[in-house]
Length: 300
Ligand code: C5P
Image 1: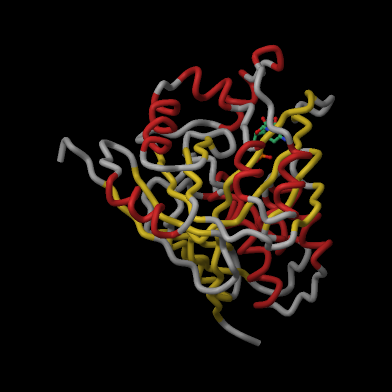
Image 2: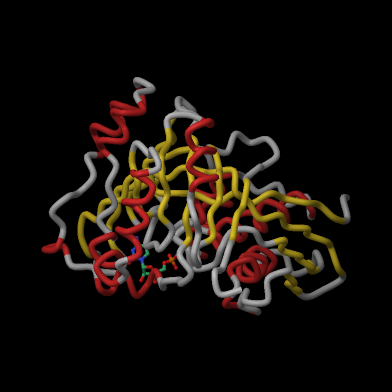
């Protein structure tokens, strides 16, 4: 049995996000295209005799059950009380509270890692069921790639890897609470929902302009209404040559979609960050992740 392993945990962006209604369980019924990107955390998972320990290079990461990686270890090890415990070190690169599924992808990596480390032989659907109990985005993070997600986000229709995207991510200097954004969401304020049917059509024809026309995120009606930075960043990205600029998930990260690597890189050089973190990324292709990061704070 392996004693230790390293698992990569890629972030996601939502290429579309539509809310179809509020459910009786308090969650919202979604229709969203999720897409894994090359910005990733790296988790080192070590077998220890008992207990769960989580450490990180990020002091702001919550400890204990508030940390989804810890919760994932708890959920899976509870089923196998005789196996032992884990020590998890999270090399955190994905910003927190950013709309990039940073916590969910760490949880997915822990489930996959412990499954291998302790030879549990759990099937993908068993892992997905555990993931769904931890958070709405965890099943997608387990599956990866690109998918149309429905329900709370756990009903997944995988899409083929037809387009390799070049994106510039801009994370403003503040974070938002997903629960709070959904709490404030008002269907009546939506006047520009995504066209998921047109998106799928474009995706299947490898039509970048086609998908860009269909991309919208209805949660902007909450986050962008509250923080004017969202629309300002979108405008800056369009001025720098993005075909489309959109908020990811509940925000506040905004991403620009570029025609190719050269135009994305040019925008990365020209974007003058104030308090934002910026990341030049691509679609995640399952190989070792890669991104360029740039942070600059004028006050320092
Ligand atoms: O599932 P997860 O814990 O990641 O979701 C965080 C919060 O976002 C939930 O507590 C809920 O308030 C909200 N949410 C929602 N509908 C979804 C997903 C999340 O209302 N489909």
